[in-house]
Length: 566
Ligand code: HAS
Ligand code: CU
Image (cartoon, rainbow, N blue to C red; front, side):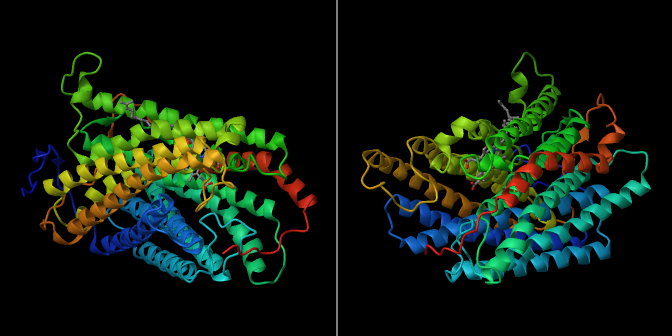
C-alpha cells in the first residue's frame, strides 16, 4: 500500500493532494460524532432493507408485523436520521473551513447540545419502533397511530436540528460583519441556504406533530383531521428531499472543481439555484397528494405548475456542472468536442462516485417529472415505481455523493491518509452500488407500471392474474437489494479503516474548495439579502396553501379515531 504524501503530487490513482492546516481537535470530535451516528443509523437501516427485499422475493418469510416494523425502521433510520446527521456534520466541516479555521466555543457547545437532543430523540423514537408500538412507516400517516414517544422523539430530533443551524448562521453573520463588501464563501452561503430551507420546511411537520399527533396519541383528543395532517406532512416532505439534495449539490458545485483541478464556472449561478430551491421547494407538497380527496383540483394544479418550476434549478445545475467539467478537461489542451472528457480523473473515487450519482439523477429526475404530471401520477402513485424513483434519487444521487464525501472527509478528520487502497475499494463500492440500484430501482419502476403496490408486504389482489406477473421481478429486486447490502458493508468497512487503521499523517490533505473561474463575475449583492428571498418564499407559500388549508379547516370532518393495523 502506497501513501500519498507530497504536495500536488499525484498518487497511484492520480489523486492530487495539497496539505493544509488540520482541523481543531475539538471541532473534529463534534463533526465525527455527527458522522459516526449517521453511520450507525445507516447500518440499522440497511439491515432492515435487506430483510424487506428477501421477504418480498420469498427467500425469507417475515410475519406481516415484522415486515412493516422493518419497513418503518428502514425509512426512519435512513431517510430521516442518517441523512440529517450526515448533512449537519458535512456542513459544519465546510463552514469551519471557509469562514474561519475553527468554531467559536459557544457555537461548539450549541453544536453539541443539538447533537445530544437529536440522539436522545432518535433513540426514543427507535425504541418504540423496536418494541412494535410504532409501526407507522417513515411518513407516519394518520390515522395509523404510534406511541406518543415516537412523535416526541421525532419532535426532539427536529428541535435539535434547528439548534444545529445556529453555529452555521452565527459563523456566517460574523464573517459578513468582518467582510461587508465581499461575497461570502460559496460553501457557507449554500449551507445557510440549506438550513433556511430546512427550517421553513420543518415548521410544517413540527406543527403536525405538536398540535395534532402528540395530543391525539396521548388521548387528549380522540380524533384527528387526516387530510390536514397529511398536508402538513407534505408541506415538509417535499422540501425534505431538497434538504437531502442540496448538500450533494454543494459537493458538486464547490468541492469537485478542486478535486478535478478545475474552476467553478460561475459564482453567481450556484447561488441563484439555491435561492430558487428555497422559493419553489415548499409550495409543492400537493404533488404527493394528487390522488387524495379533500383538496380541490385547482390548488393541486397550482402546485403541479410550481413543481415544474422547481425542476429549473436542477436543469441549471446540469449546465453549470458540465461547464465546470469541460473547463477542467480542456485545461490540459484537449482538442475537439469530447476529448476533454478523457482528461477527467476517472480513477479518483471522489470524482467517480458523484459522477455516477449525476448520471443516475437523469432518469431519477425524469421519473420525478412523470410523478408530478397530474394525470400520469394516477398510474404510478402508490406503486413500486415511486419506491424506484426515490431509491434512484435519494439512495443514489444523494447517498453516492455522501459516500464520496466521507472517503476524503473521514481521514482528514482523523489525520490519516486517504490511501490508494481505500480509493480502489471506494470505486468498487460505487460500482456495486450502481449495479444494485439499477437492478433494484430500475425493476421497481417496471413492476410499478404493472401495478405492484408499494408499502405492501404481500398481495395478489384476490388472485388477480396481473399480480402473478410481479413475482419474477421481485427476484431481480432481491438480487439488487443484496448487492446494496454488500455495498453498505463495504462502505462501512472502508470508513472504519479510514477512521482507525489507515496510516497516520501529520499533514493531512487540503479540504477541497474550488476556486472560481477568472472570467466569472462578482455575485450581485441582492443574492445575500436573505430577508427578500424569505419574504418571497413566505408569500408564495401563502398563495399556494392558505385557501386550501382554510377550506380544510372549514369543512373539517369529524376526524378519525386511531387505527392500529399491526
Ligand atoms: Fe421525488 C416522490 C417529484 C426529485 C425523493 N420523491 C418522492 C419520494 C421521495 C422522493 C423520497 O410529483 C417518495 C415520498 C413518499 O414516501 O411518498 N421528485 C419529483 C420531482 C423532482 C424530484 C419533480 N425526489 C427528488 C429528489 C429526491 C426525491 C431529488 C431525493 C433526494 N417525487 C416527485 C413526486 C412524488 C415524488 C410527484 C410523489 C409521487 C407519488 O405519487 O407518491 C425534481 O426535483 C427532479 C429534477 C431533476 C432533474 C434531473 C437533473 C439532472 C442532473 C444531473 C446532471 C448530470 C450531469 C452529468 C452534470 C430534472 C442535475 C452529465 C454527464 C453526461 C455525460 C451526460
Ligand atoms: Cu415531492
